[in-house]
Image 1 (cartoon, helix red, strand yellow):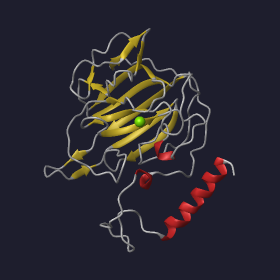
Image 2 (cartoon, rainbow, N blue to C red):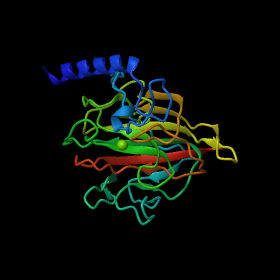
Image 3 (tube, rainbow, N blue to C red):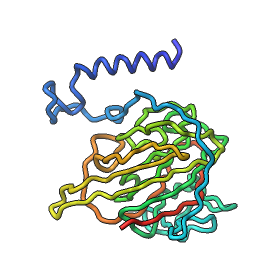
Image 4 (tube, rainbow, N blue to C red):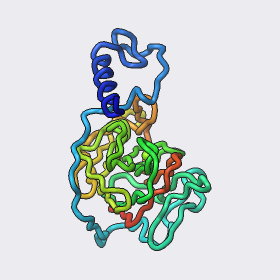
Length: 272
Ligand code: MG
């Protein structure tokens, strides 16, 4: 049986099981506190698959009041997430490329932000390799609220004819919201994200007053329409909010072995 057919069968079986079986971490009555160990697959969603739309051309020079975060010349606005040392990614020919060779890790802005509009362009290399989540994986973290991958990730991935769980494909709020459509361009072509981020607001006791909201466009197509995030994006388990203030914007150096992706033309406009 072909792999696609197997996947369809597996999805159908999973759907049938989900209709009757308790979720991981729940007992038969659906209460939390079961003994099953949470797995990454517990929070993967595979269907329905967002429809594919052909994208228009990119056109997004920064407005006059934008703060340019990367203009092709240097990483003066960025630091290494791990230790706040100079960002160790590669700048050449006006392009920023993830540095996987020396495990330099994620980079984030020196400045912190709350509510903003952001534009970013990225390119999956034409010679990309790998499958599923291990193919051009990176990420735009709308707020970096801790080390490593802590924060709220809008997924960057090669999703041009590359199958993965839909809430982990390009344009997904990772493990929370699949994109409304798949507007991915082929590897080798520049692509854009335009986002509107509204930071979560917390009460003095740390509880959520209002959640984070995200609206996002991928290559000009709406992919997230004012979705309310359920908390930071997590690889394993359900999201849980933890109070924070203004935070840096972060780009991910993912650990998969596929060739590194590149960025250009990153700018932000803060909103009061
Ligand atoms: Mg990622």
